[in-house]
Image (cartoon, rainbow, N blue to C red; front, side):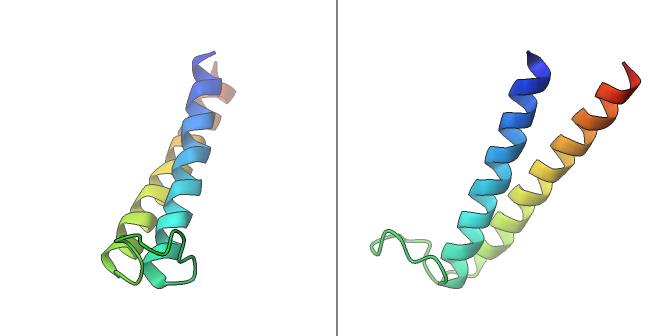
Length: 67
């Protein structure tokens, strides 16, 4: 159960990170009133969040192989 929750959390982190990157770069300007559109700091935060999501999934995958 905890492994499934971890995988879902990792996937959500990757999805939200990619959305933040898209909004920060202006490629995903939705909603049009968003404060994140064309704000380059959100590209950085999105990359960090997506990277952490990948790390979470890799760690869970390796722990699952051991146990």
